[in-house]
Image (cartoon, rainbow, N blue to C red):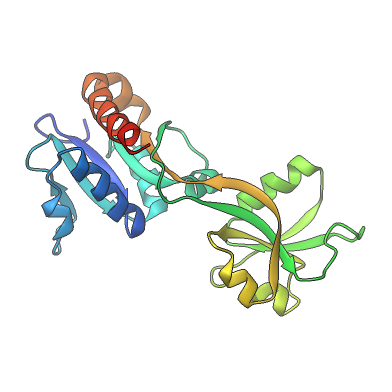
Length: 216
Protein backbone atom coordinates (compact mmCIF):
# COMPACT_ATOMS: atom_id res chain seq x y z
CA UNK A 1 0.00 0.00 0.00
CA UNK A 2 0.92 3.65 -0.04
CA UNK A 3 2.82 3.81 3.28
CA UNK A 4 5.34 1.52 4.91
CA UNK A 5 5.17 -0.28 8.25
CA UNK A 6 1.41 0.00 8.52
CA UNK A 7 1.38 3.79 8.52
CA UNK A 8 -1.30 5.81 6.79
CA UNK A 9 -0.25 8.66 4.54
CA UNK A 10 -2.19 11.94 4.31
CA UNK A 11 -1.67 14.78 1.80
CA UNK A 12 -2.24 18.25 3.25
CA UNK A 13 -2.89 21.37 1.16
CA UNK A 14 -0.07 23.84 1.81
CA UNK A 15 -0.89 27.21 3.37
CA UNK A 16 -3.91 28.01 5.51
CA UNK A 17 -5.52 24.58 5.16
CA UNK A 18 -2.26 22.97 6.30
CA UNK A 19 -2.14 25.25 9.34
CA UNK A 20 -5.77 24.54 10.24
CA UNK A 21 -5.25 20.81 9.70
CA UNK A 22 -2.28 20.84 12.08
CA UNK A 23 -4.34 22.74 14.68
CA UNK A 24 -7.08 20.10 14.42
CA UNK A 25 -4.62 17.19 14.62
CA UNK A 26 -2.87 18.68 17.66
CA UNK A 27 -6.16 19.05 19.54
CA UNK A 28 -6.74 15.35 18.70
CA UNK A 29 -3.47 14.61 20.53
CA UNK A 30 -1.20 14.13 17.50
CA UNK A 31 2.37 15.41 17.78
CA UNK A 32 2.68 17.62 14.67
CA UNK A 33 6.06 19.16 15.51
CA UNK A 34 7.67 17.61 12.37
CA UNK A 35 5.11 19.43 10.17
CA UNK A 36 5.54 22.70 12.06
CA UNK A 37 9.32 22.57 11.45
CA UNK A 38 9.46 20.84 8.07
CA UNK A 39 12.88 22.01 6.87
CA UNK A 40 13.43 20.58 3.39
CA UNK A 41 11.77 17.26 4.08
CA UNK A 42 8.76 16.44 1.92
CA UNK A 43 7.21 13.66 4.04
CA UNK A 44 6.75 14.10 7.79
CA UNK A 45 6.11 11.29 10.28
CA UNK A 46 3.79 11.89 13.25
CA UNK A 47 5.76 10.39 16.18
CA UNK A 48 2.80 9.30 18.31
CA UNK A 49 0.31 8.10 15.66
CA UNK A 50 0.79 5.86 12.57
CA UNK A 51 0.43 8.72 10.09
CA UNK A 52 2.82 10.38 7.62
CA UNK A 53 1.99 13.79 6.14
CA UNK A 54 2.84 15.02 2.64
CA UNK A 55 2.63 18.78 2.05
CA UNK A 56 1.37 19.57 -1.45
CA UNK A 57 -0.46 22.08 -3.63
CA UNK A 58 -4.22 21.56 -3.69
CA UNK A 59 -4.49 19.95 -7.17
CA UNK A 60 -1.66 17.55 -6.27
CA UNK A 61 -3.46 16.47 -3.08
CA UNK A 62 -6.26 15.13 -5.26
CA UNK A 63 -3.79 13.49 -7.67
CA UNK A 64 -1.92 11.73 -4.85
CA UNK A 65 -5.15 10.44 -3.27
CA UNK A 66 -6.69 9.35 -6.59
CA UNK A 67 -3.56 7.39 -7.51
CA UNK A 68 -3.34 5.80 -4.05
CA UNK A 69 0.12 7.07 -3.09
CA UNK A 70 -1.69 8.85 -0.24
CA UNK A 71 -4.54 7.19 1.64
CA UNK A 72 -6.15 10.44 2.75
CA UNK A 73 -6.07 14.13 1.89
CA UNK A 74 -7.24 17.52 3.12
CA UNK A 75 -8.33 19.78 0.26
CA UNK A 76 -10.79 22.60 -0.39
CA UNK A 77 -14.15 21.88 -1.99
CA UNK A 78 -13.20 24.47 -4.64
CA UNK A 79 -10.45 22.18 -5.94
CA UNK A 80 -12.75 19.14 -5.80
CA UNK A 81 -15.44 20.94 -7.80
CA UNK A 82 -12.95 22.13 -10.40
CA UNK A 83 -11.01 18.90 -10.86
CA UNK A 84 -13.72 16.31 -10.46
CA UNK A 85 -13.13 13.30 -8.27
CA UNK A 86 -12.71 9.55 -8.07
CA UNK A 87 -12.33 9.21 -4.29
CA UNK A 88 -14.50 9.32 -1.18
CA UNK A 89 -15.32 12.70 0.33
CA UNK A 90 -15.87 11.61 3.93
CA UNK A 91 -15.89 14.66 6.22
CA UNK A 92 -16.43 18.41 6.19
CA UNK A 93 -13.64 19.73 8.42
CA UNK A 94 -15.40 23.04 9.00
CA UNK A 95 -12.49 25.36 8.23
CA UNK A 96 -11.46 27.20 5.06
CA UNK A 97 -15.04 28.42 4.64
CA UNK A 98 -15.78 30.72 1.70
CA UNK A 99 -17.94 30.63 -1.41
CA UNK A 100 -17.86 30.79 -5.18
CA UNK A 101 -19.79 33.84 -6.35
CA UNK A 102 -20.81 35.41 -9.63
CA UNK A 103 -19.76 39.09 -9.55
CA UNK A 104 -20.25 41.99 -11.97
CA UNK A 105 -19.37 45.67 -12.26
CA UNK A 106 -21.58 47.68 -9.94
CA UNK A 107 -24.66 48.92 -11.79
CA UNK A 108 -24.47 46.45 -14.68
CA UNK A 109 -27.52 44.33 -15.57
CA UNK A 110 -25.98 40.90 -16.16
CA UNK A 111 -29.21 39.01 -16.88
CA UNK A 112 -30.91 41.83 -18.78
CA UNK A 113 -29.41 41.09 -22.20
CA UNK A 114 -29.72 38.36 -24.82
CA UNK A 115 -26.11 38.52 -25.96
CA UNK A 116 -23.72 35.71 -25.05
CA UNK A 117 -21.99 36.78 -21.87
CA UNK A 118 -18.29 36.39 -21.28
CA UNK A 119 -17.24 35.07 -17.87
CA UNK A 120 -13.68 35.22 -16.54
CA UNK A 121 -12.58 32.68 -13.93
CA UNK A 122 -9.70 30.63 -12.60
CA UNK A 123 -12.29 27.85 -12.33
CA UNK A 124 -13.69 27.17 -15.83
CA UNK A 125 -15.26 23.81 -14.91
CA UNK A 126 -17.13 25.24 -11.91
CA UNK A 127 -18.27 28.16 -14.07
CA UNK A 128 -19.39 25.91 -16.95
CA UNK A 129 -21.38 23.62 -14.63
CA UNK A 130 -23.12 26.60 -13.00
CA UNK A 131 -24.32 28.11 -16.27
CA UNK A 132 -25.22 24.73 -17.78
CA UNK A 133 -27.66 24.25 -14.89
CA UNK A 134 -29.22 27.58 -15.88
CA UNK A 135 -29.36 26.55 -19.54
CA UNK A 136 -27.23 29.56 -20.49
CA UNK A 137 -24.57 29.66 -23.20
CA UNK A 138 -21.55 31.65 -22.02
CA UNK A 139 -18.00 32.23 -23.23
CA UNK A 140 -15.56 31.31 -20.46
CA UNK A 141 -12.17 33.00 -20.32
CA UNK A 142 -9.57 31.29 -18.12
CA UNK A 143 -7.58 33.77 -16.02
CA UNK A 144 -4.60 32.76 -13.89
CA UNK A 145 -4.14 35.97 -11.91
CA UNK A 146 -6.49 38.63 -10.55
CA UNK A 147 -9.82 37.91 -12.21
CA UNK A 148 -11.23 41.22 -10.92
CA UNK A 149 -9.32 42.92 -13.73
CA UNK A 150 -11.38 41.25 -16.47
CA UNK A 151 -14.60 43.31 -16.05
CA UNK A 152 -12.60 46.49 -15.36
CA UNK A 153 -10.76 46.04 -18.69
CA UNK A 154 -14.03 45.04 -20.43
CA UNK A 155 -12.62 41.61 -21.18
CA UNK A 156 -15.59 39.96 -19.46
CA UNK A 157 -19.14 40.77 -18.34
CA UNK A 158 -18.69 38.95 -15.03
CA UNK A 159 -16.38 36.75 -12.99
CA UNK A 160 -16.80 33.58 -10.98
CA UNK A 161 -14.34 33.50 -8.12
CA UNK A 162 -13.76 32.56 -4.49
CA UNK A 163 -15.16 35.20 -2.15
CA UNK A 164 -14.44 35.40 1.57
CA UNK A 165 -15.22 38.92 2.80
CA UNK A 166 -15.95 40.59 -0.56
CA UNK A 167 -13.44 43.37 0.20
CA UNK A 168 -11.39 42.81 -2.97
CA UNK A 169 -14.54 42.96 -5.09
CA UNK A 170 -15.69 46.20 -3.47
CA UNK A 171 -12.29 47.83 -3.88
CA UNK A 172 -12.47 47.10 -7.60
CA UNK A 173 -16.06 48.26 -8.12
CA UNK A 174 -17.54 44.77 -8.35
CA UNK A 175 -20.53 43.28 -6.55
CA UNK A 176 -21.53 39.63 -6.05
CA UNK A 177 -24.98 38.96 -7.53
CA UNK A 178 -25.34 35.23 -6.98
CA UNK A 179 -23.72 32.44 -4.97
CA UNK A 180 -22.39 29.59 -7.10
CA UNK A 181 -21.30 27.08 -4.43
CA UNK A 182 -20.22 26.92 -0.79
CA UNK A 183 -16.64 25.90 -0.08
CA UNK A 184 -14.82 24.43 2.93
CA UNK A 185 -12.02 21.94 3.64
CA UNK A 186 -12.85 18.28 3.10
CA UNK A 187 -11.22 15.05 4.22
CA UNK A 188 -10.95 12.71 1.24
CA UNK A 189 -9.99 9.02 1.09
CA UNK A 190 -8.61 6.81 -1.67
CA UNK A 191 -11.23 4.27 -2.75
CA UNK A 192 -8.93 1.23 -2.48
CA UNK A 193 -7.49 2.38 0.85
CA UNK A 194 -11.01 2.64 2.28
CA UNK A 195 -11.45 -1.09 1.63
CA UNK A 196 -7.94 -2.34 2.42
CA UNK A 197 -7.26 -0.13 5.45
CA UNK A 198 -10.81 0.36 6.65
CA UNK A 199 -10.10 -0.02 10.39
CA UNK A 200 -7.18 2.46 10.51
CA UNK A 201 -8.98 5.00 8.32
CA UNK A 202 -12.21 4.77 10.28
CA UNK A 203 -10.23 5.29 13.50
CA UNK A 204 -8.70 8.47 12.10
CA UNK A 205 -12.06 9.75 10.79
CA UNK A 206 -13.67 9.05 14.18
CA UNK A 207 -10.92 11.01 15.95
CA UNK A 208 -11.49 13.96 13.60
CA UNK A 209 -15.27 13.78 14.06
CA UNK A 210 -14.92 13.63 17.84
CA UNK A 211 -12.81 16.78 17.93
CA UNK A 212 -15.06 18.63 15.47
CA UNK A 213 -18.12 17.79 17.61
CA UNK A 214 -16.38 19.15 20.69
CA UNK A 215 -15.84 22.44 18.84
CA UNK A 216 -19.54 22.96 18.13
